[in-house]
Length: 110
Image (cartoon, rainbow, N blue to C red):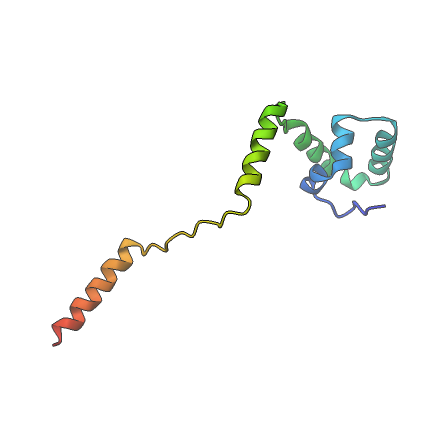
């Protein structure tokens, strides 16, 4: 069993079993978490914060059709062996001015 005593509210809110308890409590997970909270009263506030975090985060589910899935998969397969584009290193304008000024100063000595 995992030691939850050092968990922060964010740790609880990211734990899949805790999320399942908050979003879809069933007999087993409800019993575990209510028993755990009862035996660790010092964590009640943290558990409350974590429950609020999980309750306020809602991800929208978008159904993906088979045709869209196949189209994306085909693009991945088609491009997987292509080399990654190399980007040219761009020297920022302020460095260019600095280099030009340094050259002018050096040339003024000759």
